Image (tube, rainbow, N blue to C red):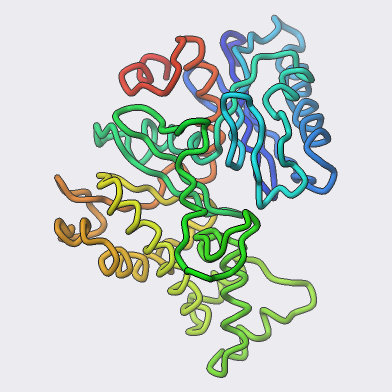
Length: 352
């Protein structure tokens, strides 16, 4: 039985797939639709497909009863984004979408209020209050999402840090390899080039070219149908060459996290996104790199990495899994109803 009042739609826009979820007032998922993000078809086509999914759920849950009452739509998009104008910036994983007015385009098609946020900020909001940060009572944390690219969300003093225009927290485009690989953003050596799913594929291809690569890794990388990050992960449980690929990814991720800790001295860093499923494969190398590159972390090194300790930075995998971005996006309209300009820790429990 669906309560038809005060429902929200959440949209998780990704470089590979897009999900549309309908949530009730207690933030329970009612229904979800997934679709391939047809990047080459352009942003307007994607907006229209999202609107079709929303319209389909509207019809389904209005049939035979009172129409559903929708507070609004929240959408988490890859960044950078100008949150003042609702316009997308230079998106390395969504080529051709630059300067598209995503917020207004979706509002026009759906005729509903739309709240736009970066996908990593949306995931950070959800993990902070409903996931890894739920029982900590912390008001500051960072979340790094390892997906098609690398996103990050920063929360300081109970508020999302947006920067001047909503582009704050682009850790994925921090340099970890000076003069390294050319990134789609135009810079070189970005964390995204080494710690994302696409980065893992590049690392695997490079490892397969080495003299000590196993035949199994070489066969995987060169097979005609291509290979995925999941294929590399499955191989890595027993293959030393594939394991070294994840060690390399963990090393670069650790450098990125070390820089975050050195600059911000955060108490909690959550690692999510699809690649976080391979936590056990890359985490040991990640922790070594954090210790090697962060003076701040070494000054208060945790005695254990699996349990949070007082006054020590805790780095952990996300709890909510792939649902974090969708859930965080669906929270945005509820925050807007309370006229919250930025996420405030004291208000969130009242609306969920």
